[in-house]
Image (cartoon, rainbow, N blue to C red; front, side, top):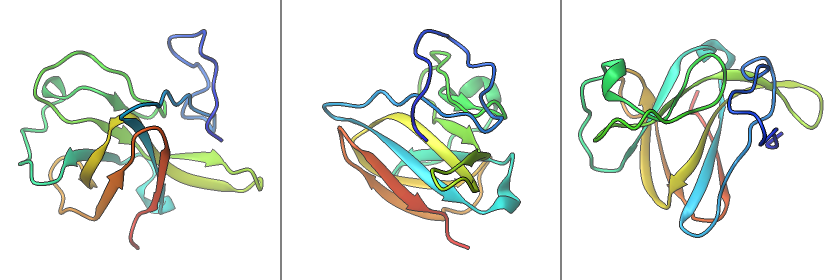
Length: 137
């Protein structure tokens, strides 16, 4: 589920059930969240625990993955990453909705539906590994 084509800048199949490329190691990990199908297309934001929410203007955020299913940085300063919830095939062949954050610095995080929904999930991301979590129902 978590592999991809490292030779292309944009994956033309992303968001259509494609896989994603994770670049982890050292103090950088990744976060994969199993999501309810009813959140398909919603954007989930990731912030360090204890940090306040910034304005959710698109121009004030980096590291976002819209309906195409993966994140990409735009270099905006002082902003929070967000990704879209998309359906992806599982190894068992079923469709699973998920939100995938890659290149996440090791630490504790809070997640919520953008722009400023209540915190729904708290996770600790470890460097050099993929942290998996399930969105509460």
